[in-house]
Image 1 (cartoon, rainbow, N blue to C red):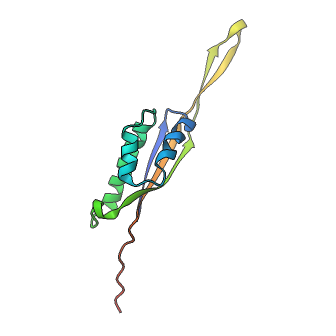
Image 2: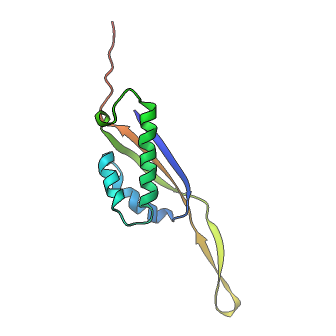
Image 3: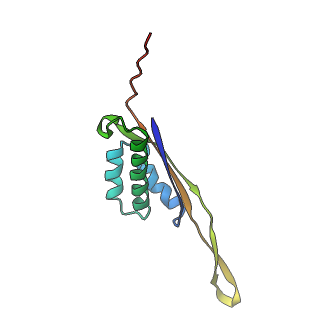
Length: 122
């Protein structure tokens, strides 16, 4: 019982975003939301909204189960590099230095820690 949420083309470098993502990997959803709410790093707001979206996706997928009973946790989070915008910055003696403005893609998988009860009728 898991749900996925993806966010693409966030204008922050993947390295900076991975620092925030590493703090919530494997955490319970409530604890992860608390961490992200008070984290001052740039990517925390984007990841918080994405985590809320993953929780909503899980609720839409499993309407018969209450969210409080599900015991959700962050199963997988990873950050991939996106497209880079290339710019030139003026440098001395008529040269130009290349600037890469990086972006990234984030994927969050939220799963239920409690196993679903399966009844086998004979």
